[in-house]
Length: 220
Ligand SMILES: NC(=O)c1ccc[n+]([C@@H]2O[C@H](COP(=O)([O-])OP(=O)(O)OC[C@H]3O[C@@H](n4cnc5c(N)ncnc54)[C@H](O)[C@@H]3O)[C@@H](O)[C@H]2O)c1
Image (tube, rainbow, N blue to C red):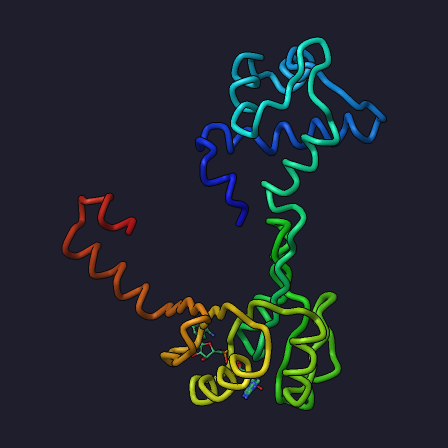
């Protein structure tokens, strides 16, 4: 995460992709500077708002010169995390894992399932979409060589801790999205998000029953 984005008001942050798209087009057409009036016309945001928005990124505009397109573009790219692709590996290409591989995570541009692993010889060596499935024997070397920092666990609960231990002690993985019902023990430097569909369903049913009219609570 970029530190600067924390200080930017939400309304400004929401306009960043708009600015970014327009500036990228300007850049592609060879333009090096742009005035807030030109920007305003193109993105349909008044120029006072644009100047205020841009002031959060430092005093970038110069009187009679406008804004430097390259500078802004570099700033936006960083702030919007367009530069950083988080590479993800999926372990366990069964019912759930196959569904995730078929789902296009690239819709949000900065996460991508790069590789998958399974122990089933019928699956190893195959591809789903553009993702290759490797044997678990290659787990550590490939996680390191592909620079994977996040894994999705869709394996049977009984083997979840063993695979987790392998990953957390011998690779650079920092985050685990755990779909198995197993509660995982990990070093404090690793973050685990546990998604248990049964628990979520039970909780939904509980709230429907006990707080039928309270949308604030049931959205929790
Ligand atoms: N299917 C669902 O709707 C669903 C919903 C919620 C949670 N889950 C949980 O997700 C996990 C996967 O469920 P599923 O239905 O896809 O199961 P599945 O049996 O269809 O798939 C499990 C896959 O993991 C592979 N595998 C087994 N041991 C392995 C290991 N040590 N290393 C790598 N791969 C290994 C198997 O070969 C298989 O391809 C389970 O823990 C399940 O409880 C599933």
